[in-house]
Image (cartoon, rainbow, N blue to C red; front, side, top):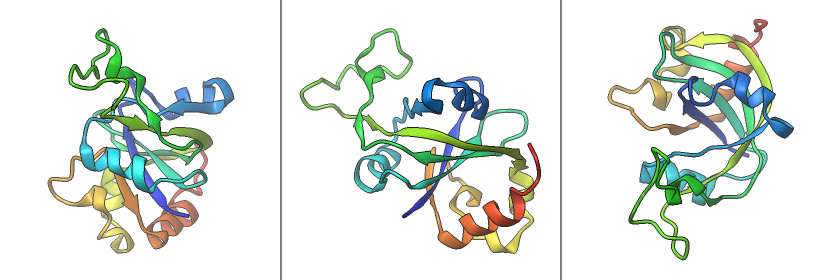
Length: 156
């Protein structure tokens, strides 16, 4: 089992949207970075843990816990000319972009980015690295345990 931090802009897909979605599951659409795509396509497995992170908002941070719930498949937004994620160079025979579905596990009280920076146990966490812009980053087992057992205990 692996662990991941997956960023989403809450006005596009929030932890509440995930909690209220049919089967409490959403496709992780719109990833247009090759490294993040490769994580989903090549490494993620059903059952992997996900820290659901709200980004590009007034207070970014971890808002909930989810789980990878599908194998990778082509992201349909790449084929839709009306989508902001449309990719005219991608085609159905050889799609460029893939996604996985994630399923809701738990909403937590927001753990702000600033709070994550306060804990030496998380000093090497990729989301905290200067210049990190990836929407999906691996999380170590120790980081996952610290966040889910120590920081996420507060009620949402």
